[in-house]
Length: 261
Image 1: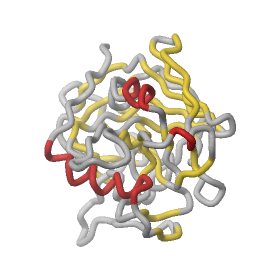
Image 2: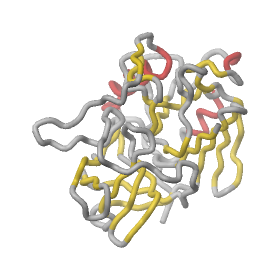
Image 3: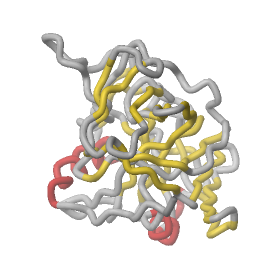
Image 4: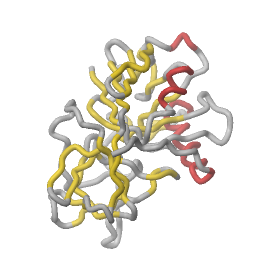
């Protein structure tokens, strides 16, 4: 298996970047989390995206477990089940926020992969087909770890430290959620904002349903003022120095992210 190549930000992701930019610290409207979220109507299965809340699917039972970096990309939308071969409860699209869907594998059985999903609730998982004609399989050699208490982000590649940076994390009322997740997309806001790039992950605020018009998606992004680094001041996102943002943007989509207290 080979490392997943990072994508070039497409113009089709511009609107998503704008919404998530607002949802990561640039907006003012907030809604307290209630566990609600959009579902498919009229018998249509919900899509497993950052905008949806999924029901009936299993939670990740090892939220701080390690993976071997195996990631998969659906070649076309795939059914998502609570168990291998079970009835479909959702659909995993082949695109996320204008780029390809890459999700990490946390468990495998013959012909099936259990993957982390980018939807609510946090750490929701599902089983998808694993046949070669259904998914492309690769391996990310990168890994990201965020220590919330120490306010420290560490990036490794093939087990070797690429860099470590002091970052800003969620404040007490809107903490950065912990557990394992993954790099979901690489976005460039269409207009100048507080960050030239936004890297949303497959996790959401535990205390806000929405923020600034976005779905409360947690992301890595830059910040123009350096005095925030080392502090708990965000709405759940992780603000990183410019060098860290550049390094993170080179990590493949699907790369595992571990956030610890």
